[in-house]
Figure 1 (spheres, rainbow, N blue to C red):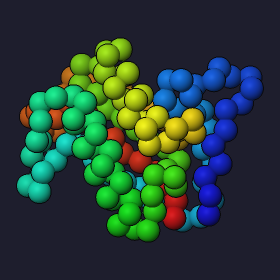
Figure 2: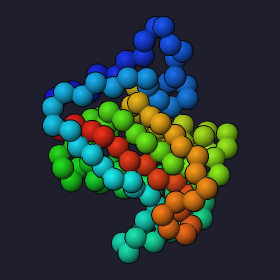
Figure 3: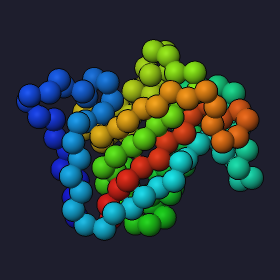
Length: 130
């Protein structure tokens, strides 16, 4: 049950942007719903984008561990950024590099006008294996 991360030579090297082109998963798939900067009641805890990103990924880790998986087993991320810009992309890239190093999972980033709750600036969901 492994995730094979690859970047075809015919395509650009995306790892500097915080993602890989292809992730092939073998084993039991795990789908993690959107995680964000939430407290025990589901409310955001900070208005700082970097804090929200860090908490969202910490929450993703909790969700993964709850089903016997972890960050290393993530095949795909989908990230959502309110009012996306290059500064926010840099924050996201730094967080992804801290977790996955030079082998980030496949990722699609979507810039959005708003998310589900007031104050949410970032959300991440994932597909993993266990």
